[in-house]
Length: 232
Image (tube, rainbow, N blue to C red; front, side, top):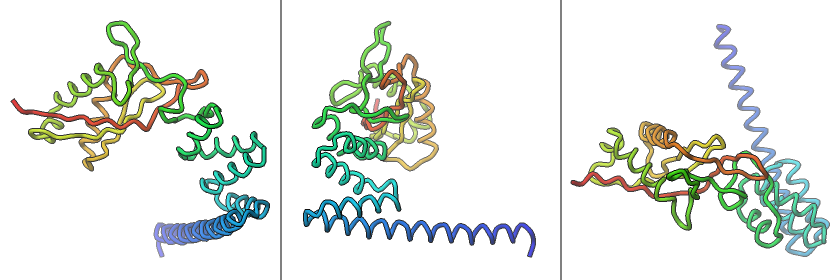
């Protein structure tokens, strides 16, 4: 066997072993979690906590186990531990945990490199005629931003051709911590269109990045519809 073939074969074996091990850990984590849920439903909280803790020892990103530990901790009066579990859930993308922290416990969401719009202290801005205006307004984006996006997309030969007479693009916006905009085109699978939309958005000037706890963050979780129409 050639050296390169041997290396490839070894890689396949190691990958298969790693995948199998990960699957076994996940299966064990799910089994432990289900046992914890059973104990919780029977109000056997000590046993439930043990099982949920064993769950996250197998899978530290098990959001449901972490959330249940938060609820049990808060119910037992341990606010600090409960909040800590909830903050971990938020970092893993649990929006119910974020809502509980914000709306029920009145606790600020901890800083992370990437955050949802609802969780940040200071939203992004766009400079319009020398004045900083909110990039997002209730249920929509600032008209100045919409104008820039439409101008860029209609001015693109690729997008105009793709849109035909009329096409709606669903853009999942990201406002980067360096003040640039990007987006995932949710209803289009063309990589060329995706790259072109990214290029157009990243060229939009006068954007002020969002911030939280005094530090710039990347914002996610804001989807907007943009219709490109070429009717004359």
